[in-house]
Amino acid sequence: MAAAVAGPVSIPSPSEGGRHALLDDTSDDNPLYRQDLFRMYCLKVLPCSKRYCHDWTTCPFAHPGEKAKRRDPRIYTYTGVACPEMKKNNHCPAGDKCVYAHSVWEYWLHSSR
Image 1 (cartoon, rainbow, N blue to C red):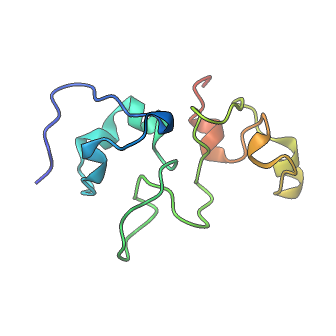
Image 2: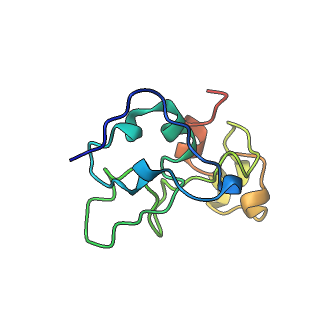
């Protein structure tokens, strides 16, 4: 059974350490997954903790090799503009230090959009 959420729940930043207890509820109907803060800072950012075969396309967490994976916008500063190197070569020599969005998810979910 999923935990009830009375109102908005703050999402701890990586610098605060730890995880919110609701993040450990891996059910697909977790109410935390519908909140804007989760979508902005956790959706396809936090690694998936499920250790069984499941549909990663519907899972809100990041998986190894998944193209939808995003950099944490609280740690990495990038704009909502697509990276020209990624568009041209599908690889950016600047890596995580690049100031541009590296994936469609980073582009779509950027706070400037």
